[in-house]
Length: 119
Image (cartoon, rainbow, N blue to C red; front, side, top):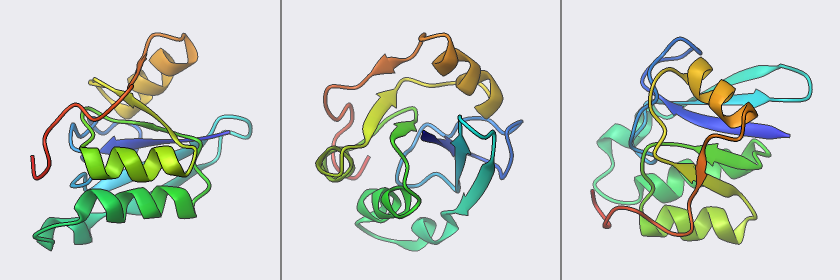
C-alpha cells in the first residue's frame, strides 16, 4: 500500500505541508516495502487555479492509496475520492512522525473537503 504525505521539503524529516495542492513535495511511501519516492510538486506554485487537481493526478499516477495532508480543497477531494484514494487531514509535524501516527491509527480520515476552493 502506498501513502502520499504533503511535505515542505524532499525527505521524511521535512515538515508536513498543510496545503495539499500547493505542497512543494509529495513523499510517497510504500508501507509494504519501505520504498520512498519523492514527487516534485513545485510547478503548482505558479498555477492560478487547478493546483489541487494537478496534485491529485500526480498521486493517482503513482498508485497511491491514501493521502495525508493538513487540508484538502473540494476539487482535489472529489478527484481523489473518485479514484478511490482515501484522504487523511489535520496532519502536522514531520513526515516521519505523521507516518508513525498513521501506523498507530491516530490520523483522522476526512469525509469531505475542509477548506474552500482557492484557499
